[in-house]
Length: 314
Image (cartoon, rainbow, N blue to C red; front, side, top):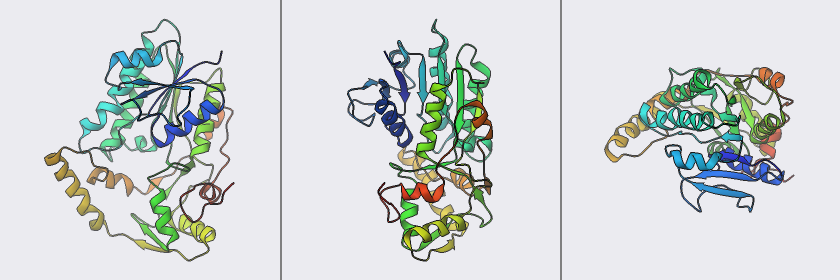
């Protein structure tokens, strides 16, 4: 019988893509979800939902029962304090790791970190992702683990970058930082392929690995705008956004979150992370660790991303 794969964060963009590929390949999936009926897409007879959270020891026990493979996609991306991020991105990793370490059988754990962890001083989110990696480095003894640091991830199901691509398709490309800033990207299918390569790999070295689409030196916003121009056959004007324009809502969000108790996406710390000039990475270490190479770069990836004018049905 095919091994059941436990997945956290199954209702998110990347988690959904992983679950779909797993079930399409015949793997039973056990998904940790916050409430029945809200999680793991795609809906499938091969997806069993475990209601609970990373803070609940009993639900984590139920999640990993009779399985030795866990793909951890859950994470906090919104918040105005370090504690809001740490509770999920550090403490959640620790609880999941401890649950696996307390088993008699050996286990394997793949976690999705973030390239932001490379610069933990920039934001609460970045610091929390770095802290989650440190939990694995310093506390894993029996569990074989791998942490992937993806840059910006896009593709079918993405809701974060798609509005930006739609705006560019109308002829406007807002530039949030320096025109010299460069960044890597990765298409979601390539990221999922890396997860499958990890599943198939019998022996790998535990550690933190970056992943990208193979574009040496990454991209800048002019590269992205030029790609959108080719796909949409219309000029795209790059407009630099002054720092104060984004700074005002970022500071308002932080103050309002203290009053109303919500977790904002844009804060001064997040803005500092977004405006960082160097988010370029490569996949060289990952290629050596796994039988995997990226296949899809930006122009082809945007052609395969539905929901905007540059999409071309495959």
